[in-house]
Figure 1 (tube, chains in turn cyan, red):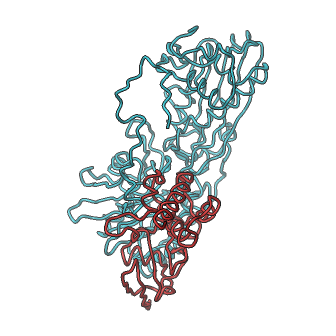
Figure 2 (cartoon, chains in turn red, brown):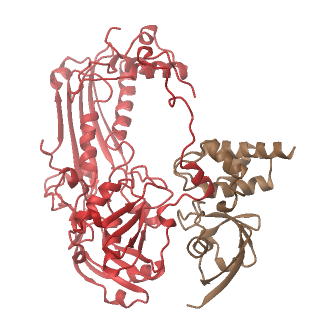
Length: 455
Length: 160
């Protein structure tokens, strides 16, 4: 490891004891000896296995559910449907007042995506639970579905989620999150060139090696211990408390050891229903996703579409940027309204542009609900922005790295969402990248600083 | 369901269990015997997290029926350290920052051990090939490869 001390030398302290020093990870000894306890390494006598009956349709009305054959299957202990869940309609971010509650723990009257949980089967063995789940009969009336964000936003499109009433999340700013800065149309008028491009991405699965799950133990005193690989311990505890209408002090969550998360384990999915199963049977319950469920059912990163229109001058200055972003939430909100909002704040990227117009939409479709993943709301936007930057540089015949120096934000610059820039280091990162990648830039760019313009 | 007797040695200790016919070795080790060092990542033979050593050969315990292991000598990662002293591979993984979430680590170490037992001084290409059945989603392959090469060097130094 090398610390370059020539950057920000005035802010540097030399009495640091940890920075620049390799330290052994405290969890590694457990990992290399196989002693680290993941949730599924807990086994309890009498533990039941939970398997989910899932919707085979993208959008359908549930006419009826018949569990009678499944109940007779050897080893079956309990079968749960929507009516067993005390507060069945929830949304994760209600904890920070981002509603409405729009998702069912177990489907009630309707399914809105292929794979949605409908009936939970608890049995003595995983095999018995699986076999009994196959005997649950659900009568569906298939409804028209919409899979494309642009189609979903058209008038007359099938309504995906009645709790919203329209196929987009209604922010306090209206149908999208908006950022307005300067006069973007005047900027385009004054520009030497205009470039408008569309970028889009598909959903991305986190694919952790350890699948999502939990093991719940009733402690015999109305308290439940939940061993879980959630990445969001207290979000999960508080949402479970709401869903099960159970005070938080009845819930003891044990976690922190996650066999790969990447954002894929921040939703509240397995814990409430497993705890309910443990409560209603009085027995330990294990609910662990199969590999197929992990790949098909767990929330992926949202598909996104980003339309960028830029006005650029021949000298390299970007004078106007208009971005319209679309985040495919799938059938339910989960963390997507937040992701789309984050995108609005993130554009126009780490560049200072005097005229900016941003609209970001969170759109509902009959696809698998998307949610958090590594910089969600920002990562796909950055892909689009940086490809756009390369195209703009090519358009005006400028070196792409020098083009970024010209537009890089620096301390004191006002960002489009009106946060003044502080602690910028983009100039210095690009200077070091120029050296490390042997991509020479003109001397004047190497003399620049994030501290002030003209420095 | 009629139970089937299974008897083998696990990390040198005699083990005997009755299991349902068709029970995987992974299930028997984890849920019957209590050795949770082999992990179940896919239960379909694609991720390598459940790797164990059976009679010197690398095996996927999720695709191995317990009842086929009668009389076998089985080694898992939990049995590698002796008297509290880490095996050179464990030490090398620790020193090389070759673990992140740790879920693939026991399987990786099993695959590496079989390689070094059979090929004490492997080339980098041989290490990559030996680990090719083990998925690390945190994408720490490079430190893992370096750890195996380091362990091989420390082994050969000890032997010299």
